[in-house]
Length: 119
Image 1 (spheres, rainbow, N blue to C red):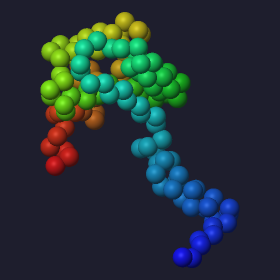
Image 2: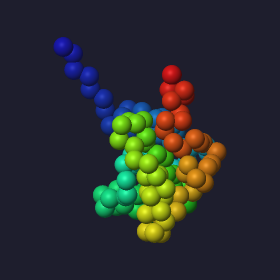
Image 3: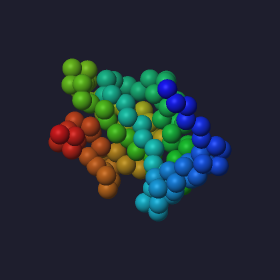
């Protein structure tokens, strides 16, 4: 088996090419983060922490905070859980820029409504 040795300059060039191609175009340089809980009831503390980190990161970078509902496991879905999640986030001062109730350019924001996209 042959060893492949890449010097630091070559690696830096490859990294720069990848960064330039995938992360610096005008369409991709705006921060977009999401919080995607399953609708199984009220928001729990771990979910709140994750949502808060993502929300603060987005706002600190002038970006967008998205609430996407991960409801593809229909056996775990609790009625009215989406409304409860949105209420709990609002109570904590976390207001999504895009969500099932707010809408947005890249909806739908409920995963079960996006299944055709993945087929």
